[in-house]
Image (cartoon, rainbow, N blue to C red; front, side, top):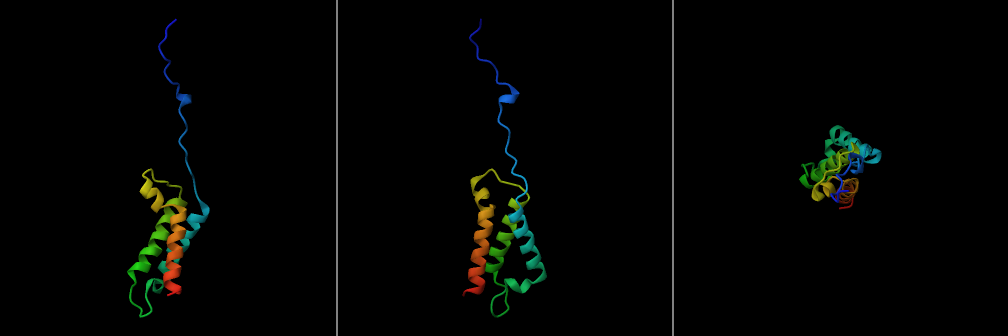
Length: 102
């Protein structure tokens, strides 16, 4: 009778979580991609000049929606926060507030 600990079995290891597609985020990302491609004046100010702040918010919302929508969840906490479905929604809300409620 030995007192040596047994080696863990392969079945004891936890399965990695695979999130899969996230429909609402993917739909938002694709919609923003199409809207920005079809109607670029969406990212301009009242004088018709490019508004880089608006463009950044819209492209962040699109990127985060597409990243989360295809099921990719980054490991590093900062990237996970910046490319989550909630950050996509937050960036879109900030875009709408700056674009239409100034």
